[in-house]
Image (cartoon, rainbow, N blue to C red; front, side, top):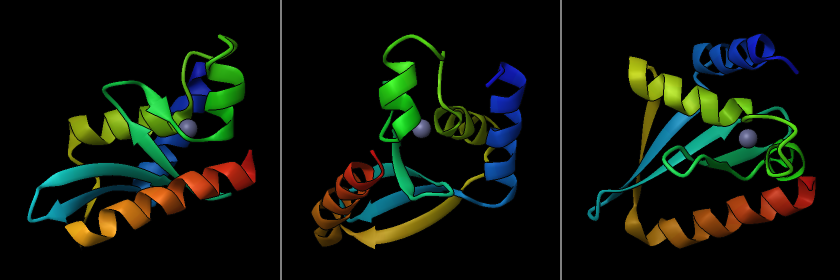
Amino acid sequence: MTQDELDSKALEAIRESRVKLYIFKPSGRKMWIVVGKHGRYLVLPDAEYCTCNDFFFRVMSGEKPSCYHILAVKKAVKEETYSIVEREDTSYKKMLEDLLKEGDRTR
Ligand SMILES: [Zn+2]
């Protein structure tokens, strides 16, 4: 996948409101999620980390510079084009576990 293709997939995700910032209350803890075709992915934009297959197999091996989920979150932050979802702190751990499980299934 070329950089242009990555960029257009990132834009598409933003346009379809698939970039979400979960804010947990009352702690204010944040979690970035991109909803992809095969599942939801947890993205840590500052660490340039994503839980998708592409990241594990192609980004970590150096084949690709990034996956489009990371690009989508960065672009959404810059342009403030993400959706905000509020959750209770009590659901944080469960949500994280579910996301990591979803990652396992698609890997
Ligand atoms: Zn990804």
